[in-house]
Amino acid sequence: MTETTDMIDPVTGEIIDQKELAESLLEQAREQGVSLVGPGGLLAGLTKSVLETALEA
Image 1 (tube, rainbow, N blue to C red):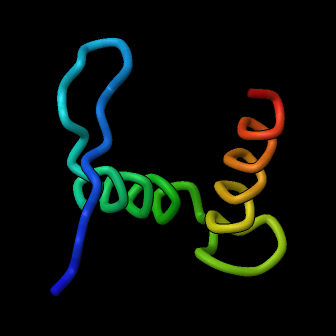
Image 2 (cartoon, rainbow, N blue to C red):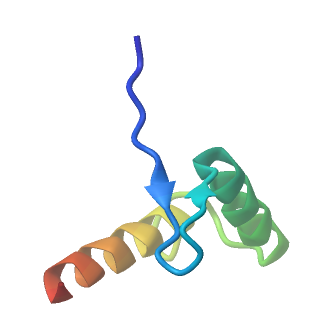
């Protein structure tokens, strides 16, 4: 059994559809020619942004 935690948009209070968000990010990356992995890839950029934001909080 998988347990998921809903993400809530802090501005609107709406539940964020994580799958829809991931699909949107992947589509944008494809359109811009950004790879999923590797230097300059989507995952590296997202990981960096999340860690930096967490450290600032």
